[in-house]
Image (cartoon, rainbow, N blue to C red; front, side, top):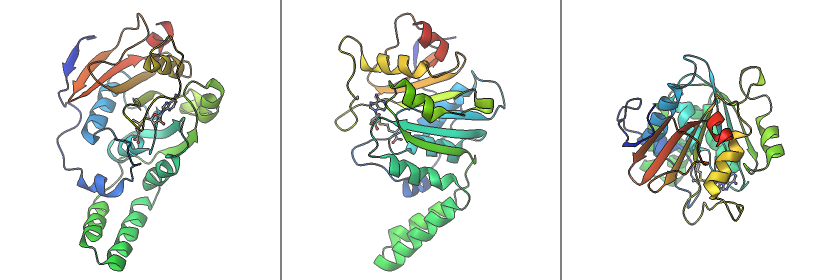
Length: 252
Ligand SMILES: C[S@@+](CC[C@H](N)C(=O)[O-])C[C@H]1O[C@@H](n2cnc3c(N)ncnc32)[C@H](O)[C@@H]1O
């Protein structure tokens, strides 16, 4: 168990060309998304701490346009269910549109849309995007849901997570790209606590103690509640990530 911060070595996500994903994923203006390779790497690292081969339920408690969840569904095998929640309902239609790519026929329908746009506007870039989309085969075929919920609103979160996980045991893994920057500020936090710490504490109350939480922020480190020991910390460019058991957050 390492608590130091290491520059990320990509052990679970080989370098790959993700142009097809860029062509197919819709993003909300001003809401930067987590890099694809880092998303897959962090999921792979989290999986090491979870029962091998069990189908996973993943919750993104600040899902925005759903890019993180959709990337996981497209590239990571063994995902049974994806749950997205966000305090801001604004980008959730985009999240539904992105996650619908994982439904049977979702990618084919998007490729056909792009081909129709190419024909209507005589734009080769749409046709190239359609060709790229037709190369994609989702690694998982998860059920998914998207619901507005402030992560600190216990009742709203419990309702969004109802029935999640095998036998309703809740999410196994949380992957959260924490708010940062101009457009993705925190919904108001208690004055006396770091908003990220308050967020993580609240998220943990909805989880089994053995669930793994991965939180990614800008800057040197992601603060944890006092005394909570991480499983691992990593840095990638200007981002810092932490992997921590929900139980450690509940005790911290
Ligand atoms: C960096 S964005 C996440 C981007 C997302 N992963 C994607 O793929 O599009 C951070 C999100 O956190 C949301 N947010 C801010 N405070 C929140 C809170 N208290 N509970 C839930 N979501 C919150 C913002 O609305 C924003 O959509």
